[in-house]
Length: 286
Image (cartoon, rainbow, N blue to C red; front, side, top):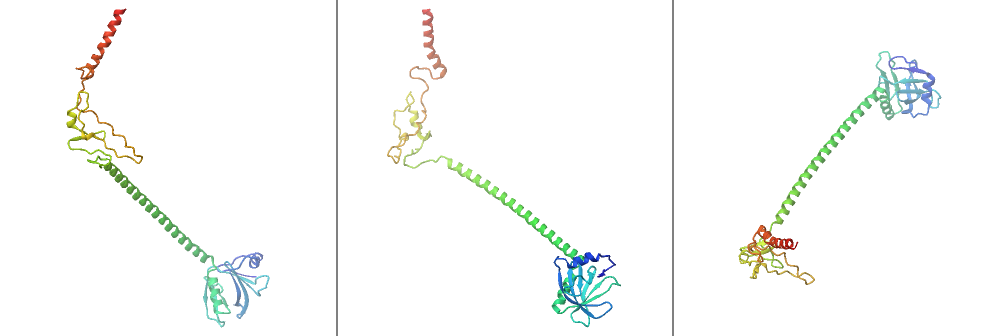
């Protein structure tokens, strides 16, 4: 088997190369081409098998071993002028390297072989891998940027929601405080109306004029219209209970039973007299 190197001579194990050429590993491309001989300049029809960067050619399609191999590193594939139609050449960078001229059976086959051979070298594969790595890096950066932008947008949205919630809470608090304020008048059904000159105590209107006319026990003898209760009956027909009565205003703090006890100290002394009398009687009895 003939061994061909693009730059310098390479020592190849013929048995290993022949096994690789005929093993079950799928080839990149196969087909018949016309190859121009080195000594015999005529074109010979050969069966070519492309695997990786190695182009094997056999004498026949059913041949058990290849008759030669071309290592496609540091080469260029281009069209050339030749007596054969659809011809192309495989050239290497080295000045003394051999130029391989081949011809296809059709124009489509020629284009297909030129494309496949041009992409077979590891240099080309290295460029493809580098380009794919650059594209992957750009895609990862774009995804990272989109994720960062999405997180910032989500953070801004969360902050806007929190501010809106705070404003809503503040508005609710303000409205609740406003609703607690005491109205000056209520409806006529089941509620007490405030008259001018009267004040509210425990939810009931209380007339100051009536308070000034209070008796000594703190209750008025005049039925004031301000404390009249007219509750609206509920669904069962029973009237609701009246409101808590107002505090007695204007009443004298002096007890009617013990005159002169208008303060707690005098009242305590007045009741203490009975205790002193009982104590004296008890001592005398001893």
